[in-house]
Amino acid sequence: MTVFRKIEGVYKGAPFHMVGDGFRVSNYFPSGNRFGQRLSPFILMDYNAPFVFPPSEQVRGVGAHPHRGFETVTIAYEGSIEHHDNQGNHGIIGPGDVQWMTAGSGLLHKEYHEREFAKRGGLFQMIQLWVNLPRANKMHSPRYQELLSSQMGRSDLPDGGGSVRVIAGEFNGIKGPAQTFTPIHLFDIELKVGGKAQCSLPTSFNTAALILRGSARINESQVVHEGDFVLFENVPGEIQIEGQEDHTIILVLSGEPIDEPIVMHGPFVMNSPEEIAEAFNDYQMGKMGNPNF
Figure 1 (cartoon, helix red, strand yellow):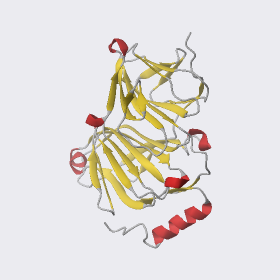
Figure 2 (cartoon, rainbow, N blue to C red):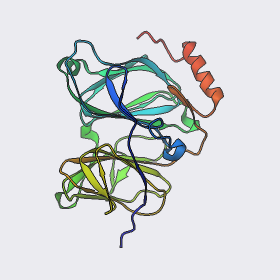
Figure 3 (cartoon, one colour):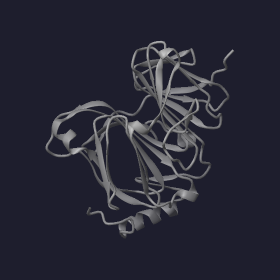
Figure 4 (spheres, rainbow, N blue to C red):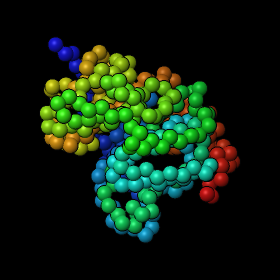
């Protein structure tokens, strides 16, 4: 008889709000639900649920802003996102693509709707995760991983029940392309009605799932719906997800906790208040680069 990993709780995100003028997001944590370090190494999740932006000659988004001490993971489902920074990096991601940015020691960047998408308008859907870096890597040189849809690991589920797209880590022996500083599993599951995905993730890894579309039955018991965030207990057991509607999509995130102090303030995530003060000072002194780019 299969032993299933227990569900700790099912949560909703905070009310939707605008980030800049281009991202209409619900924050699931840390402000939407104050989990503290319960979800380490994941420290923030903003979800721009499907939303139609009208055509605009002005590019919508967020202007130049700094980061230090962590990584941003932007997953595009609908629409196109463009970015560039003060170190000369530039890129565009569209449906199925992921941008994995290591802020590390610090940089300034902009994120906005890709220009042609902004002009024509349309459906926009994305997720941004913040992933903490361990103390030893917080001052790593900034880097980007532009992970295209064609590069993702893919695993077909039994009986034509759906598929799994692996961004990071591994599902049933299929590996994702993302390089991570600490062990992380990150993948999308798409299910048909009755399609089942089952996985065994390390008990010590903090593990959760967000229902992006449709509905699913978790561990043969609890039915969850679009917008629900499912947090699992750190106990032994399998996780089974069964589609209750065609085209149900679930994002699963699981990672080894980083057992270090966390101090977050605005765009900086460090280990002490003194390091936060140093980050603000470095930014104000121009040590993270020229903001006029």
